[in-house]
Image (tube, rainbow, N blue to C red; front, side, top):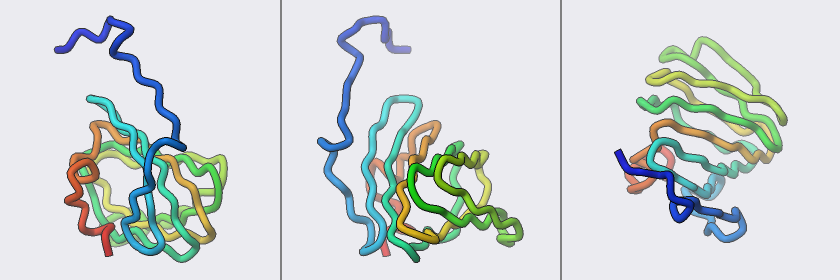
Length: 127
């Protein structure tokens, strides 16, 4: 395990310095990743849909602006609207999809980091 006790391992990042990655005409994101966790700003225009998917990564979603509607479960049987100031926890391997009910800024935390987001193999988002 790396020794992170040195102050030289500490990194300061400004969201303004991170380029916006356009995944589709209505979805963009910015990422900051460490070795054990990832933080993302996800920008969704009203009507943007994140298709149903699942991943091994635990996910915590915090809505800074707007509202996201989530459908939870393989059968999409549970519907949850997450509003500005609210947080949704999605455990590992739980199926989910989302739609922006208004222009939305979503902060996602993943543990471990999403390798598919880091290497660009997240085809489900790039439509």
